[in-house]
Figure 1 (tube, rainbow, N blue to C red):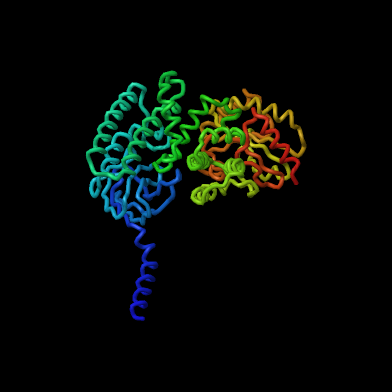
Figure 2: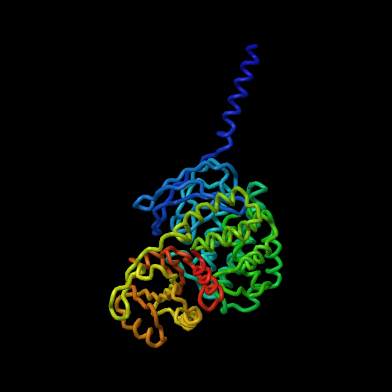
Length: 465
């Protein structure tokens, strides 16, 4: 009887302790160097989707200490508040000391063979990756000319050969060896496709060889790809590069249609990688209605639990722009120096054109906006032109209003950081919005007037109660 009791107790203890034994704790201490960030975060890379594991604050001197429980051996991303992320390979129970900058992550202490080999590769790869693509979203970083880029790629190819030899010589797990070889091949293909995408018109047709395209089509369809870091960004570039070769140009680059999204996602056969592409597109959305259209487009697909979890913070971040919210009232100056308020137009559907005096695309949209105003003459409809700028630009605004034959409700807002620009989160122009007759936002991200979709949206707003 005693023996059975002991066995039962041990069995119960084993069941209780199993979840604990499955978790490994990783401790990372480091410095952000010259890069200033208030937070550092660790993300787990699995199934093509990065998920947040832990976040810590960065001290005033740029140092930080981050600890997290990891459940799987594999690739992770360490990232700062500004969105810059660099890969790590963690096996569990590491105690790492690192240096983090915009251009890469260096492991100074505590690295095993896997982590050290990845660090050796990333010392060069991170910089080339930034020059090819990530300079677009990384503060203080720039790209390079084609000649410099080609030299970097040649050097990277040589480094790949050295790391491949080290993978043979050193004791690393079979899984890491295969993943690292795949990562180096995929990185180089991504960098070349990304550089071409970010330097349109500067590269020739032979910038990416036929053999590279064939290799990309083979590697970017492999299920093993989903275990690598930065896959959403990479698969996003691959899909757009492939679409430019195989699909017709999109009708409206700023608002891609559901059928166009489906055609692009159809270029990726693997489910995890296809979800990774959709996640990447969603993460680039700036307004709720665009995000909602994307989700509705793929409503017939069963997203994984991980995908659903990853989409939640994106949706929450866009909640402010959800149609139906009360449109913030604002004041602006009219051409006669009198004050204007949005509430002055309450009871009408208001179509807003947001522009700036220095914005050439804005000026190109003005004839379409004027024509739309003529086509949709309705007492319940008002067209509002809002120019955002600095006070010294006011005279130029008045000049452009006259030169472009603008009529109707014309106002000037003299700040990019307060009032209208802040309330409506105006970070780029041109931008078009629709406010319903009850003063609620009908669309924060309406199509440009050169496309028929804007007219259709206005008619929907007029027909609504």
